[in-house]
Length: 164
Image (cartoon, rainbow, N blue to C red; front, side):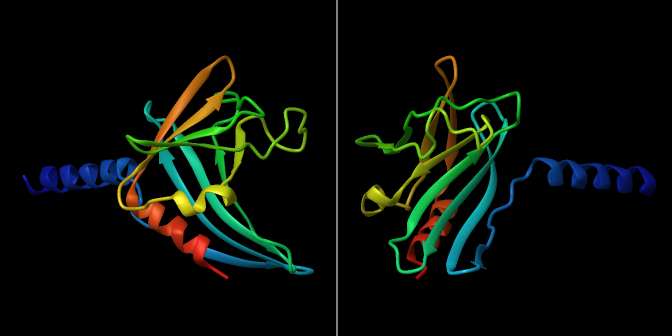
């Protein structure tokens, strides 16, 4: 009986490890020569169909220039392909939907088709972190993938924005 109970607990523990998403990550800081500071938050989160996406929210400061603040979204290769240049639709609440500009041009060959990057610099004063956001990712063939981003990830992104 004890062996069966031990095996059951082990199996349940493994299932929890596979399906429970991490609650928090850390804001990472990198210094890139000659004079670049990079702050970033990296999360893996799932869309409405349970497909995993990597969400990389980052602030890059090059010398004395104004910082850039971007969200990079990466899906599985050959499964997702972004439609460039199309904005990311950001639903903050029922009465607030924003379009976030695409950073990549349609002829941008340096990045994978399963990667999108969006410029948050112009909208950071409108962002709220007390609930969740729904990201509508513009994919090829008029497809859309939706990711519901919870408040604790948004709070981490706010920490990235506030870094100097």
